[in-house]
Each structure stands twice: as structure tokens, then as C-alpha cells.
Image 1: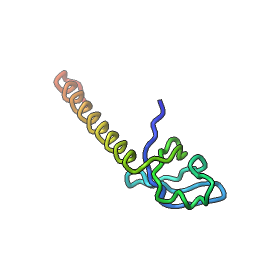
Image 2: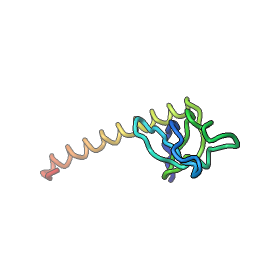
Image 3: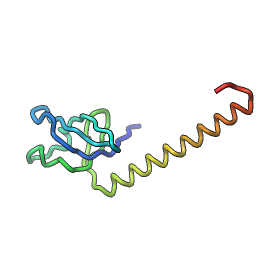
Image 4: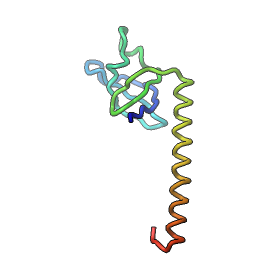
Length: 98
């Protein structure tokens, strides 16, 4: 399964190599923009939302889709934390050390 994380392109760092900086929930990552560059200047992708997977911006998405995906990932993270907390409590009840 491939997981694309929404990020917003904030700058072009190396136009010759189609590299840019993407903000993913407050964390900036260098990504290749070749798949989302389009026919115009590379600077046209600044401000655009993209799905990032293994260092590549794979596709452009609209802001609403980006927000919904980020919310779903946040909810998933919260659910996983709850599951781990329950597992930890079960282990402690069984006498295991964390």
C-alpha cells in the first residue's frame, strides 16, 4: 500500500532538478516536483497542495482534499495511540514490564 501525505509547496530550491520544499503539517521536506510541474514555470506550483510519497510530489490536490486527508491521518494517529495505551495497560495487568 502506498500512502501519500498532503503537503503545500512553499518554495523552489533547485529548478534545474525540479526540486522544491513542501510543508507537511509544519515540517518542511525537500521533494521532487517533476510529476506535478505542468507545462508552465515551475514557480507555478508554489502554494499548491500535493500528495508526497517517498520524496516525490505525485499529484496536485485541492485544499479541501488536503485538509480532509490530514484530518483522517490525525484521527488515525489518535486511534493508534489509544490502542497502544490499551495494550500497555493489558501488559501491565499481566505483570509485564513496559
